[in-house]
Length: 77
Image (cartoon, rainbow, N blue to C red; front, side):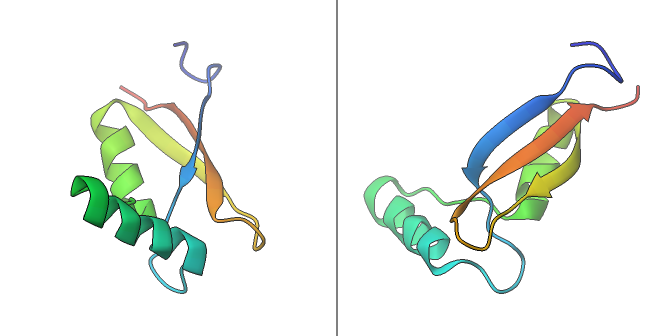
């Protein structure tokens, strides 16, 4: 990917640190029960993407949707 040009978009549940969408928390419980997993918070996504060499630019949300779009770019070296 080209720095300052390429963009990574991730369409996923992003649980806010406060006031989460009830549907997103229900998915979180489902993941925990069925596969011992979890839905990630915004800070967890930032850490994961940071470890992969990306920087989160913005998390696009809608109050009507449980899912969000994370916009990330290649982090400065």
